[in-house]
Length: 115
Image (cartoon, rainbow, N blue to C red; front, side, top):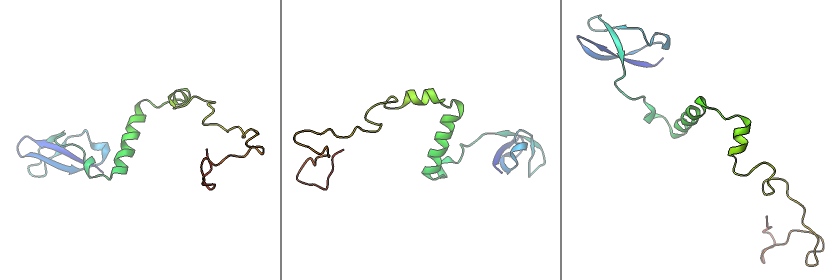
């Protein structure tokens, strides 16, 4: 249950732990029992959350109001569909210098295979 803030006209502001279903209802002041309206006096406690949870909340809020459909997602990608750099590569061609069509090592380090 979240903590809500209320403002009593006689005693000042106070906080109460209440169910979310009762968030808009007036709350009785714990000192004088006067009906008090809900106010927002402080920011949510997001600063105390770990960074990973803050990033998760941020991405969830960003996508909640306007999620991308499949066409928008494809259009926003770095490379268009069917680009040769991201898809399956063609096998190396046989040449006079490379008769077997193998990838050549770019330097004197044969364990380093080029991409």
